[in-house]
Length: 441
Ligand code: NAD
Ligand code: UGA
Image 1 (tube, rainbow, N blue to C red):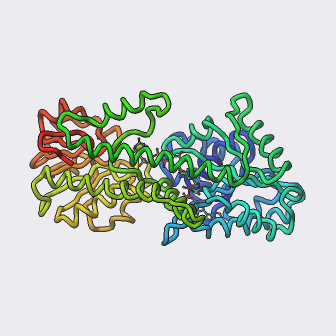
Image 2: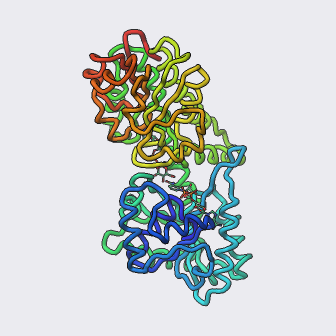
Image 3: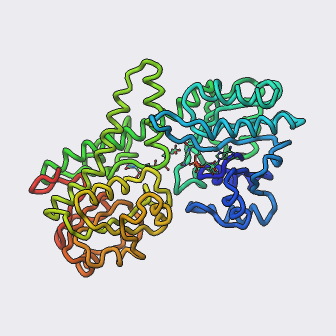
């Protein structure tokens, strides 16, 4: 495994349940803490599998490429972040190709390289295959195998998604690559093998971008509808989404209105896909709109708070939730960051709390906000509270908690986790996507 971030680490601990696994990363402190059994990320089910792999000596972390020589299968799971202009930054992929290619050159067998990193169409062929052939001095199809093999796991359920995915998508370059990939997945999954789709390398890359863009579209679409719902008293986006999703051609998933999509993937992948489309001379305005709607949504949440409180100038504003969604410590592109920035611009004094994402959030928000040790501390003396992440512990808060702790209880529920019939009666309660008498949008 090359790269032990969210994808590489989750995949490595699962693969190690079946095969001896060496996982490489250029981040040496990450490697040593992993070898000591400490997980650098918050991911359900990861810790026990890590401990099991290390104890059985089936899993080893290293920053030395030596461990890759002689491997049968090499996963590439390095990051593909957004460059400054929104295009894909392939620097990690390029450096990983040099290391992997060198290991292939020194291997006596014919290893299979599975490209898990998300790459825009054409990258597997024009960059990965070319660089691997150059640095290994071997030819793909005879000296080694290569498949584009995109990853669809979600943070928070990464282990479950790896052990039972909806599908495996393979974009092999040749017959050897396909044979080796099929053999690996058959042996890894045994009787529970998921459906396998075989397509071209570019087809596999497009399945990945198409999936993320489709899911992001649904989120932006329902958020747009939720803005309309806010204009009509008695109208709730949940009813509208349920009604839309009852059509079996549409289905109910990914229609939850909220503060917009965040995370390390949807925003960067939609941007890279848009860039790749426009570079190909295609009209990418559909993707442009998805991003615009998403950028507007956290600012709209700040506006809901401002309207409910009268003004934010000098007010104490409590933000509950910094992770881009519940069950992860990842704050990359979290909607809480632009929300906090807007609240500060409007003169609010912002305090924040998240059960696991505070250390990561500190890098983004620095000393501009106060970090509270608990949700209750965050709420104590606040004038406005905004729920940005649907953590279970926030769901458990009752109206009496808000009433008892806050100075003037104004609650903005950007995740729609509370029952309006209970919360609306007791405090000034505003939720995204719910029409009120004064027309919230
Ligand atoms: P990440 O940034 O968390 O991890 C990448 C890791 O690779 C880092 O630990 C980094 O130190 C390491 N690395 C960089 N260059 C290296 C090199 N040359 N050799 C060895 N290690 C190197 O990234 P991630 O979130 O795990 O995502 C990895 C890829 O998978 C991306 O392309 C992403 O789009 C895709 N993906 C991510 C998710 C997700 O939920 N995070 C899901 C599906 C697909
Ligand atoms: C997403 C995809 O779901 C994975 O299949 C994919 O592998 C991954 O991106 C990736 O390529 O990295 P992830 O980013 O972990 O996974 O999180 P999601 O559960 O998809 O949520 C993304 C964002 O959309 C979150 O901010 C979430 O709160 C938001 N969302 C999701 C909504 O606002 N409404 C919804 O109905 C669903």
